[in-house]
Image 1 (tube, rainbow, N blue to C red):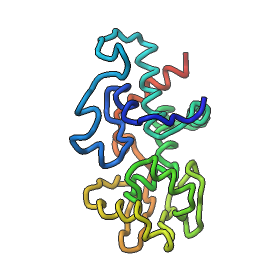
Image 2: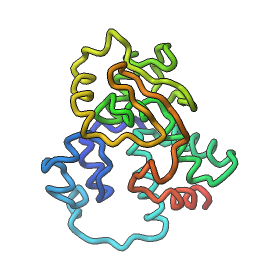
Image 3: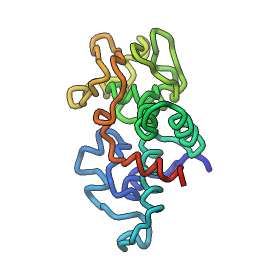
Image 4: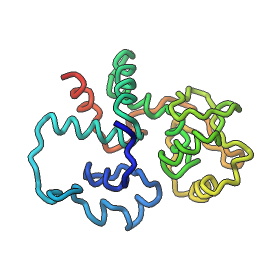
Length: 208
């Protein structure tokens, strides 16, 4: 199945919670969840009793959609997380948070993960001084992520930096706004990630 090309607001409505897929719009009165918090489709207003499997599936779909992954990509991340030491669910979140496109978004260098993914593919960001155009690139401890000098005047980048004062930067990241760069100073923690997903249900789904 290919990548979803429809309205991302429908995805938030399907999961009945904000997934913050449209950046700053999600914090305004235009947010689809605030305007019409019902599941899309003809029977969206009908309340349905969810089974255990349905609950697990919905949590997996939320996580996939937040980070913009296809099913095969997501399964690979889960497989890697399962092989690591520690709690599988937390390992999965750490791996997803360490993606370059997510780090760019978390640093405030893009307004949404989708926008960050597009800009990374176009080669507008650098890791440790070298241009990286792979959104899934794993950013490690003490890596620096910055905006290329020639890309600092781009409209999307300027808009992101203009709204930097409204963003909450996780404590595992450090931003140097004048230098257009950030530093990975720690390991993402479950508390700092703060996304509306119960990762344990995802683990249970893949453990069936």
